[in-house]
Length: 68
Image 1: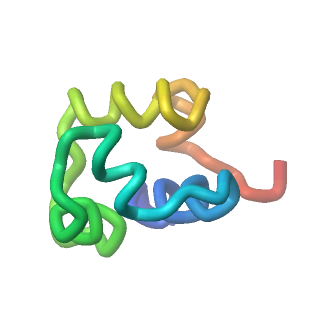
Image 2: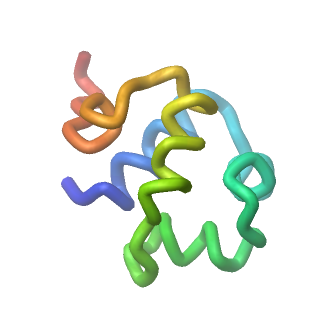
């Protein structure tokens, strides 16, 4: 799976809305939507903010296995 897929799956599993995650990483909802669709790359700074929000390491997000 792609990083975009991983981010979407983690967000959904944690019961977060796109607008909530977008606000946390300081982007607008349409920009965040593009990240989940894979049409915009996530920046390092955004990824660091996602690790804090999701309470996961960067490696856990990059290599996410929803079966764990």
